[in-house]
Image 1 (cartoon, rainbow, N blue to C red):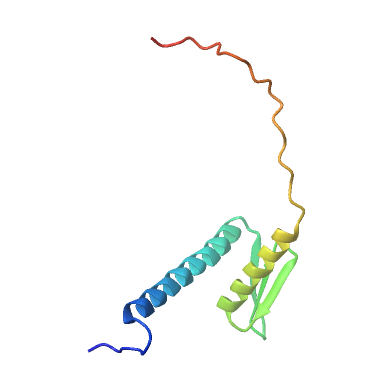
Image 2 (tube, rainbow, N blue to C red):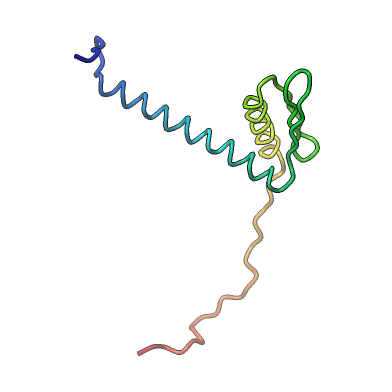
Length: 108
């Protein structure tokens, strides 16, 4: 028989575990998609150092870690923090004049 925890349902524990796995997979995919996009655009450089890996994004966001995986994840987090702190662009208002009625022929 399966493990039964007192005061909880085994199914809810399994659902919680699966939900955490789905979130982890989605986060992992997001990080590596970010890395691949920047690598394709030539915006990221990865340098092997004596201490590990040095990741530089856009020539200014630099992170170093012993693990390549951790360095990429830290660079993505640092870059995201920088991007979010930048001034947000204001959306331009519409300048076209809205006409009343349609100049297009009507289908019958």
